[in-house]
Image 1 (cartoon, rainbow, N blue to C red):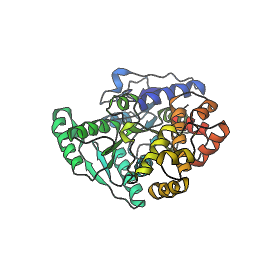
Image 2 (image 1 turned 90 degrees about the vertical axis):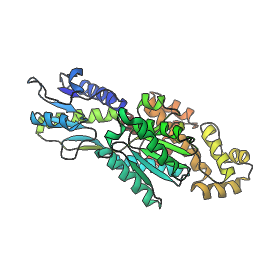
Image 3 (image 1 turned 30 degrees about the horizontal axis):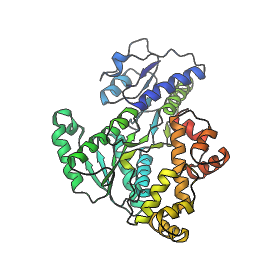
Image 4 (image 1 turned 30 degrees about the vertical axis):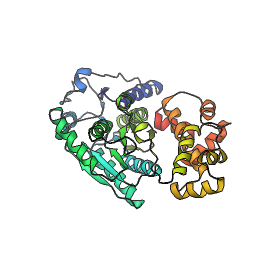
Length: 376
């Protein structure tokens, strides 16, 4: 069984790990082949001993050479819809998720930065982002560059073009990038433009790559793709394909959000509400209640609740819960902590209370979220 996934990004490494675990746990007895000399080639002409493959192509030539072999293949990633069976991501849903994140931060100016606008995933993320904003009565701008325009040979002139575009956007602005690599470049362009991140430009990428998000300055917020779950689903599809000669596509639609400094902004005109939001951000996972937030904001509880709802569309309690559940999501994806310890770290006295609040906000149990978003 040939595995054709380049291990250069976290989501693909996670997918490889998910494949290996699923094969072992399901007792399939497959012999997995991961050939480093082949995965990065543009021509995926596999040898005669290969019976089937799981492939995540990056260029059309890889697809063409593999389909020509007429071997059973399960496709992964951002492939065109005519390649079946495939494990795909709900890229429109990702765009909607980022749009909601920016709106929750109080932003009213939005933009989308695409370095690979001709790719299926980039177009779908833009569509979801724009649609999510339009349904909320908001509008967005877009700068779409060709992939050739961001080659290293012309990157300096490209970044100057992006910097000029950023200068012309209404501030503060939330910018969604079509992938984490584009997010890194956008942060560089923002610095060249003399713009403060996240106060003037809040930035979110897609991929949740551990290395890329950690190396940016400030660290890059990103939607994390469920690589482990994608790998497990690919194994299930291939087993079905080999047994029945056919299998249905899978579209993964549950994602976790990697909150970092690049989008940690509160764009409110009410300073008391800004103070309240800062207290909630810093203390939500402790013994925090509305009275404590009101005292910090210098308002009575009743006045704070009225102004807070007017500015955010939520109650103070709702915002505390949102922050707690957001952090619980990160613990579920990034650690192996049990529910009791996560509940304690997120401000819940009992695991059951966390589970109930989690289900109300996320629509599933913490365990189901960990398995799907984190691939555990």
